[in-house]
Image 1 (cartoon, rainbow, N blue to C red):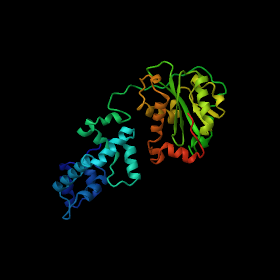
Image 2 (cartoon, rainbow, N blue to C red):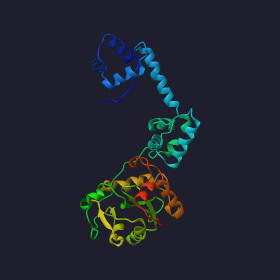
Image 3 (cartoon, rainbow, N blue to C red):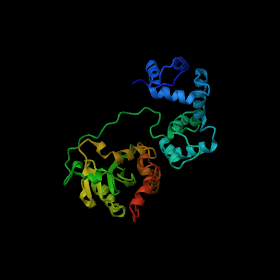
Image 4 (cartoon, rainbow, N blue to C red):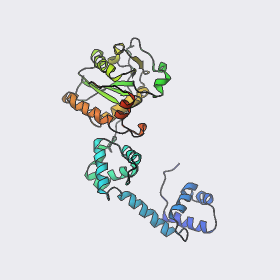
Length: 320
């Protein structure tokens, strides 16, 4: 299927002629190589009281597109709201979703916000830098190489119960480490709840399992963690110390713990992967964790991970 394009004046002239001849919508669509819904919508939206006229229809369509493009730039309050949310780390889809959820009067679609980002005004404010995937060339992504070490007492992800797989309750986490270009050993441990997407960040000085698992273990009881899914990295070899059910992905299959992989991608919007994580204080890292947890998510009906996790996990007191 070819890329969709807007109807032009020539096609609108053809629609006018065919309709006057009494040709039906489906036949017009077939003649122009368009879908019947496109032709039907065109006749409904751009007809006048005296019927469908191609010149008038073209002007109505152009006016409508022009109004959409200027909807944000012509509304200072709306513009400030969108810029503030973008800079806080919200995506255009999250902004539009919350606008709709809150029934804001002057709401716009996420596509309109994307277009605004690349207007002269948006470029002046460098809003594209707020996007998760910026307009820069991205390198090829590779999965991790197969690791030969066998983790003792490892339980395959294929044996993970269905009640964990279906994300019906909080307390079932995915865990991983993310490394940084400015340090060979220091890293961040990441725990993300599969149901609420609530995330905990833990700074480690090394990848040694005794440190990585030791720090995670200190958080487990306060978070009421019920299970954790890891990959096959040696840093998780002491997983039994966690005293919760643990499951492991197949070798070289990071997609099997896609929730935490997605979290890592979001994290690097705030802490660049080439930075030296040793220069970040624990307080600064926890501020980033809070930002991640306060951004509304489409998967949660545009609620925040923080609100979902704590509303469904009463009595939890987070200790870092």
